[in-house]
Image 1 (tube, rainbow, N blue to C red):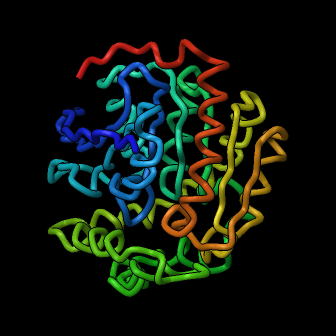
Image 2 (image 1 turned 60 degrees about the vertical axis):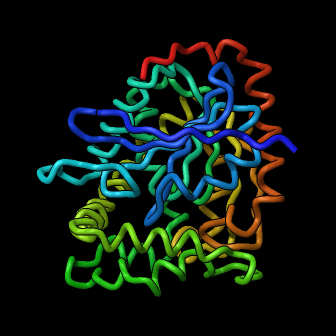
Length: 292
């Protein structure tokens, strides 16, 4: 069995040392993997193992997450996260790519897509919401909660629950993900960074109409894979995308928020098929000079 070699490194983006992991041939179809909360690029470790021999899979850590190191005066907002990921993309020299959006990856990715529509060759959406009906009552309550009510959001029980909640077989979900997430959350300054982002999340909801307009205008090739038992982003959020991208492929799985953790064997072949079609239809997508 072919096993991809995963490469790691840092890229300086305006004083932010962006950690990233990468697998696959440098002339392969670039796939930008945008992680969620409270995770980092390690959430894609198994997907990179599954598909990283065929496609150039690149997963950065945002400021405030994982191994990325941000200056003490960095201002945490989704606009700034998108700025940094945008700079990262420019630094590594990919000019057109498929992006995988999960959770926080949606707000980061849609900001980049509306700024640079020419970059987007396709999109994979996994429990990354862009529609009002995709917000549960718990999500709405959390988004509009005052700062003093959000402290429990960054504790181990909540971190673990995001992985195992809604799964059909919790024992199938490795504890490595939530254990590492909590390690990073407990680092100095990280909870303050996450609180700032939690309070900024309502600005993402305000941008939903703009993102939907972008989808209607550009109608990128779209694959949607969704855990239907997500307590934050329920199943209607998956089907809502077809209003603006009628050709989108939608696959819903009986699992929770971190759908890849339990359903990778079912989801990875769908992603591989989708990526193979994008590579066949856009053979020039991978032609980006590497400038790290």
